[in-house]
Each structure stands twice: as C-alpha cells, then as structure tokens.
Image 1 (cartoon, rainbow, N blue to C red):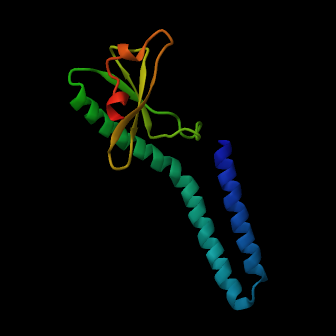
Image 2: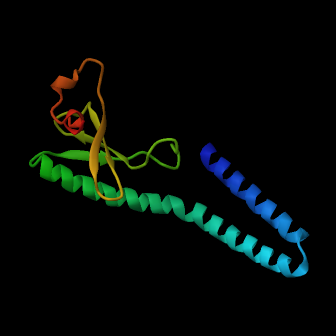
Image 3: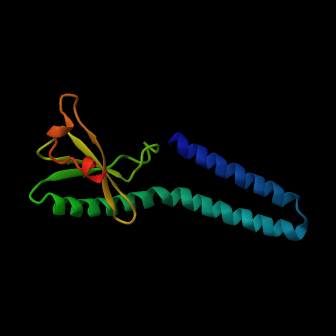
Length: 145
C-alpha cells in the first residue's frame, strides 16, 4: 500500500476514533445519535477507500477511449499505443495523464491530460537526449500555449 494511502487511512481513522470517543462521553440521547453518525461515517469511509481504485480504473478506460478518438481525428492513418501509470503504486502522479507512443517514433513518449469534460491537452514529451524538439512529428505543446 502506498504511503499516501496509509496517511489518508490514518487521518480518517483518527477522526472516526475521536468522534467515537466524543460520542461515548455524551449523554444517553446524544450518545445514540453520535454512535449512529460515527457508524455512518465509518461505512462511508470504508466504501470510499474500497471503491476509489475501481472508480479511477473506470475513468482511465473512459479517457483512453476519448484520447484514442482524438488521435484518430488528428492523425489519421497513424498507429499508436496508449498507456497509463499504475495509480495504486504511483499515487504521487496524475492517473489521468495518458502516455502515447506512436509507431513512427517508438523511443518518444507523449503525455496527454484528459479531464472529466473530455478536454485533451498534450502536457509533456519524453525524449532521448540526442533528439531535439524540432525533430518531433507529433509535438502539440507549442500549439497549446
């Protein structure tokens, strides 16, 4: 489990434990409401941590489809491979930055950001040291700025 996830779980646990302790201290009528609130927050928190990775995977698949359609329109007749990072291992990186490798430039990786609205922007290019940006065929960064 990634350290960021552990920190999130620890913070949520501390908050729920504090709420539980306050609920136990309260009078009988308020104690019941406090325990119900604590239980509901616990269930919501557990559901959040369980569902979130699957939700991100679903969003990535949807955004890959959108990016693929964009690339088909922008570069007809070309072929490419789209990949994403493992968001459970590399939580510090944006999972919605999709990496594209075109068949004519296998050593170069273009990174696109696809947001929830379907807007697409090329955000970076990874190249070997011996290639200049002027030599790239699919560079869009200068166009967007």
